[in-house]
Length: 470
Ligand code: SF4
Ligand code: SF4
Image 1 (cartoon, rainbow, N blue to C red):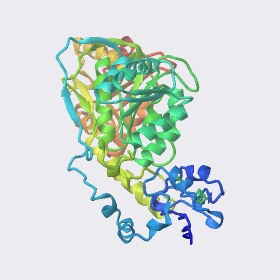
Image 2: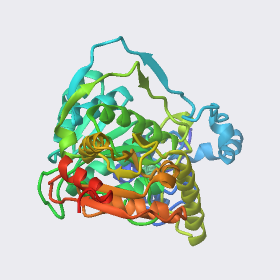
Image 3: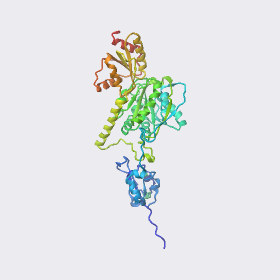
Image 4: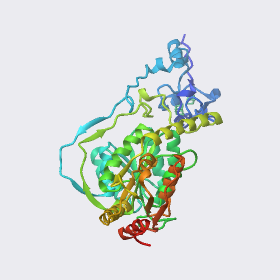
C-alpha cells in the first residue's frame, strides 16, 4: 500500500515582515498573490495580500521572498517558539544594542593624516576634498555650472576609494538618491546651483520630514530663472526660508574662502548626522571657482553606522524612515518634535566671524565673496579714522543674532553688503525682530545679476554714515 503524500504546505505571511517588493507575485504561477491595498501601520509599507484558493504549495513564492521571515510555509506557523518570538521582535532578533554614543551603535573613527604642505584648490574642489575627509563615499548629482567641478572631482576619485558617484538623470532623481543613501545611514553629498537646487526642494522637504542627513553644496548663480552664471547670492532666502513644503529648516553655512569650503563641508556632515537633517552650504560663483591656499586637517573621519539607519542588517531591522503621518494628531506631534529641534539648533549652532568689531561704530554685514570686499573697505575706513568693523555670518540659518546683538550697543549704523536684492538684510531684520531688538539705521549696498559690490562703493557707504560723504 503506497503512502498518501501529504499536501505541500501553502505559504503564510506576517504582514509586518513584508516590504512589498512584489517578487512573490512574479514568482507565483497561479496568481495567488496580489499587491496590497493598505499601509501597514507597523512598518509604513504596503504588504502583499494572499488568495490561496488555487495554491498548489509549489513554494516558488517562498523561494522568491528575500525576507527571512517573509513568506513561510504554513507548517512553521504552528511552531510555538516562533509564534512567541514573532510577538516579541526583541526575542526574535535579540535585544537591540544601542551604544551610548550620539552617532549610534557603530561610532565614528578618526584616522590621523600625515602632515603635508598646504594645497592650492578652487572652492568646489576644496568642498569635495572636505567631503572625502568627512568619510563621504556616495555622491549623487546632475551637472550645473558653476558647481560641476565638485562632482567631476568626486567622479574621478570615488571609484578609487571604494565609493560611488552617480550622475542622475535629473536633480529630482539625485535628491531621491540622497534620501536613500542618507536613510541607509551613509554620508552623501550633491553639488548644484540655484536652478538645480530649486528642483531638489521637494526631496529636501522629504529628507527633513524623515530626518535624513545629507549635504547640499549650492554654488549660487544669478537669477531669477536660469539667470546667468554670475556669483549672485540669489538663494539665501530659498535656503533659509523655502526648503520645500511644510515645516522645513536646515542649517545653512556660508563659507568665505576655499579653506572654509573644506572646513565647513566637513562640519556640515557632522551637523547633518548629529541633527539628522540636511545641511546646506551656500557658496557663490566666485567662491566655487576661486583658488586659494587650503590646509588639510590633522585627521579624517571613518563614519560609523547610526543606530537609526535602515541598512538591512539584523541590528537595524525594525528601523523605519518615513515622513508620512496620516493622522493629523501624529503629524502635529512630529512637527512639534521638528520645531524643538529647530529651537535647539537656533540656540546652539549660530556661527559668525568678527573683524575689528570690538569698538566698531559702523558695522558692515556681509557673507561669501562680498565679505572679502567689505573687509578691504573696513581696513581703508579704519586708516581714515572711521571705527568700522565687519560682521560675517557663517550660519545664515540660524542667523548669528546673539553675537550681532552683543555688538549693537556701540553701533550707530549697519551697512549690509550683498549680491542680492536684500535677502541677507531680510534674514538679519527677521532675526533681530524675533529677538525683540530694534536695529540701528541700515544702509544697503546691493547688486544683482552676478555684479558684486566693489570695495570702493562699500567704503563710500561707510563714509556716508559718518557724514564724510554726502
Ligand atoms: S506556493 Fe506556489 S501557488 Fe502557492 S502562492 Fe506560492 S507560488 Fe503561488
Ligand atoms: S516577496 Fe516577500 S517581501 Fe516581497 S512582497 Fe512578497 S512577501 Fe513581501
